Amino acid sequence: MPLEDLNQQIKNCRKCSLWQNANNAVVGEGPANAEIMLVGQNPGAEEDKTGRPFIGRAGKFLNKVLAENSIAREKVFITNTVKHLTPQNRKPSPDEVAACVPYLVEQVKLVKPKIVVLMGAVAWQAPRVEGVEYLETVHPSAAMRFTKMRKRFQEDFKTLRNRIEILQKK
Ligand code: URA
Image 1 (tube, rainbow, N blue to C red):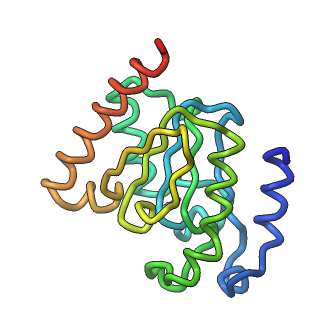
Image 2 (tube, protein in one colour):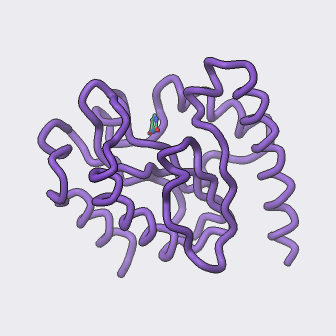
Image 3 (tube, rainbow, N blue to C red):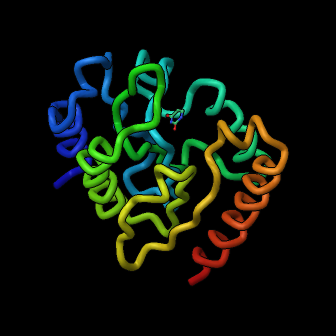
């Protein structure tokens, strides 16, 4: 199935009730053959308005850390575990994650990135696709707020930079 068909399925999804509250499903963006995939929790208000992932405050912080590691955002596929906004930006429930996470698995199978970065505890729950390397880090919103988390996030992105260089040579 092409990525566009999957995107259409996500936009039409009624498997949980989050769509009722949302302006847009935020399917994700990036090249269909990206080597790196970044996965957050779920879109916030700005992402819901525009239909694009990580464009609010957390997104600006993410952009900065990507740039510091010479990783071009346009070359990365960026998505979320849950594709719709949640009320008051609460954590998605286990049922909502279970309903939505198969779309993420499909995205990984279609894009076939070399490495998937799971950002935050909700994303860590994603089932792993064989043959793909996974890196767990904290969520950029937490990294923005807490020094210890920020250090970990920055270290993990350095690791990402190093791993992708190694994987590209393979
Ligand atoms: N936080 C997320 O987890 N995802 C977004 O797209 C924006 C903020």
